[in-house]
Image 1: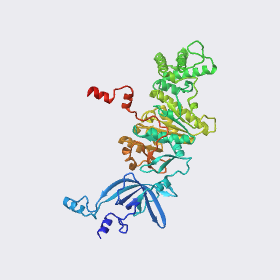
Image 2: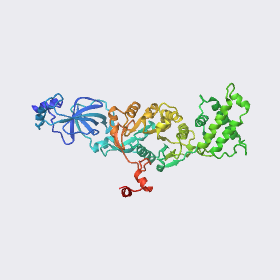
Image 3: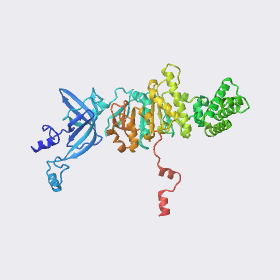
Image 4: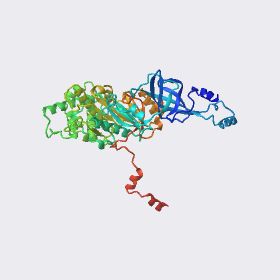
Length: 533
């Protein structure tokens, strides 16, 4: 009778009892929902543990994969309202009234035809809950087509492999987010290795020079003749609205220089040479064109505007400063940057020697030409990028910042909106999610989120992703390096994953400061003890 009372208190049918099988750890009780349920158990489930929910209803077997979200322990006779400690101690002496566990489950997916799908109905109360065995996990998480599905790691707390749909990863884009040291670069490295293994073309905008050892490294040198007036104006810090005179002067000088180059009429032995063999010569030629504008042209460009001489002088100073600070970045005889991309390889554009302004120019320029080439390819026109491309933008918060306009953000947003039509995928990588533009981030339908501690970053991610629930967000601060929440159409269902180790890791690991000091001839610890005691 007492056992029935206890079972009733726990909402367990009397016929089920406590004698659970070895694999069964509990049963569902109370109301269930398509995405959540409550389990009671005599065994202690673990937070983050995967379990199977099984039952037969009307002769049909049902199976769900669920994740243990929260666990608490209770005793039916030690309720919160108990006020007498002595009474509580006497109850504890009755061994038959042992405590039990309750666990809140998140239903990850329903198993149909050996594959996971979104749950369509709530599981049956009273259904048994068992540990997710390796064989069962491999069955529901396995790859349908190894050419399309790439292994990126294992289910957290298990050896069951986790696969990602490469097609959906490229076509629906990706964000890889984590604190510094959380494992972002390794996660990206694993994905890129799998893409290249399948003949894919990947391009990494690499601000720290970490990816060069993984493939083909590109040192950015831009042909300035390929730059638009807007790009040159951006380099010079000339804004069309606030510096309209200088912008129009620049536009006219750029047009005349282009005409001179087309006609081959460059003046030899004068301000610039016909060959124009270096970036510095190009900007010298541009300055000469500004200076050569006739008085009539000047008056025509600036009719009714005072301080025109200041505008001329200011523009020449800007060009001279650019020539001195970034001249080595430009070379009119250089092969177009987009044509240096190797098909079927990982291409790392090394930006480590550039400041942020120069890096912004390189990235926006290259993204614009990549999109153009993919559009040409999709339309059946000649293109140097005839096959789909996956672009990784490291330190994305610097190139696509919130509440700030940049050329890279404009073109990245366009790629995020239109890229799938042209076989152009985008991956944003950042350790400061809250500084990322929310509109661009929200278009990254797939997310690999490693350890994130700051609540503001977590909220920013949650607002940008419709697939990342509050239940999954709670894991982010406690994840170890290399552990991630993976969600989006490239994954069958949201999963906790231990990311594999990249075979050829990006060089983004922490250095040993003490080892470097020692190698550089700093005194050893023993020497210090001998000198200082």
